[in-house]
Image 1 (spheres, rainbow, N blue to C red):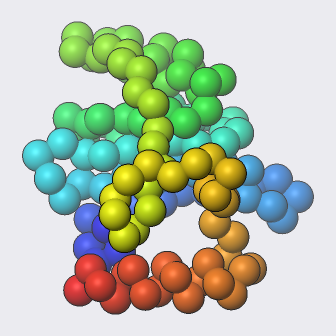
Image 2 (image 1 turned 90 degrees about the vertical axis):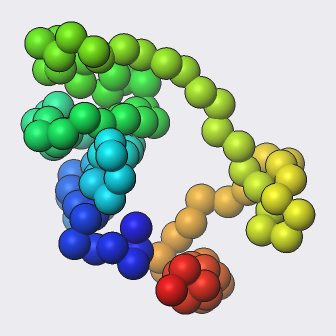
Length: 121
């Protein structure tokens, strides 16, 4: 996604200067990949409907309003998946105690992200 910004859209919800939620959409394949996270006033308004999409809702409270907005879609369905954190070397799951939330204010996180982005081309 970092290399295809023309196919990527992101919308943020801010409250008192802090980002509290977002919608990230990538339309570079047959189906759009959409991630919805955090607290959003009207999440369904931000979800693209102009193409078939797989929507990953990372905040349980956002599922109902999105499903309500998509109820006219005959193929909308809910599936549940577990997330997995992996180490970049052996690509094996790592313990949750090693997982960290990325923070743009943390120089180590930014450097690691830029390194990964550079590997992608």
